[in-house]
Image 1 (cartoon, helix red, strand yellow):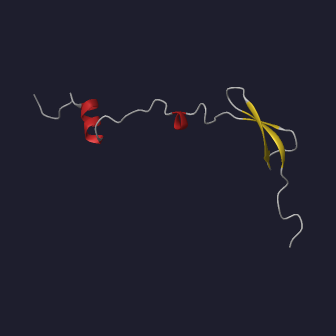
Image 2 (spheres, one colour; image 1 turned 180 degrees about the vertical axis):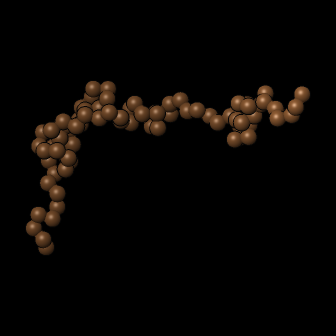
Image 3 (tube, helix red, strand yellow; image 1 turned 90 degrees about the vertical axis):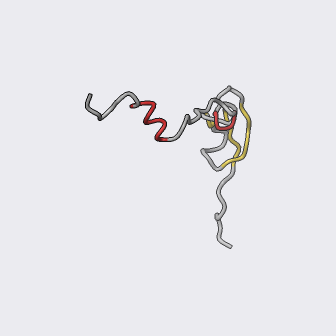
Length: 75
């Protein structure tokens, strides 16, 4: 088997957006580095079920809502 085939795992600290920290093994960085997350499962709407914009009608309904008052007919 080849030597040095597996990556070097070491302990790092992960800092969440709310300030909490935990230790884990990783190949990222070097021993005792701190990874600061910008987005994590405690704050991102994809995981928290945050506000989602519901589509109101289809494309034609959106067009009519936006341009419904316009007309091509001569008055």
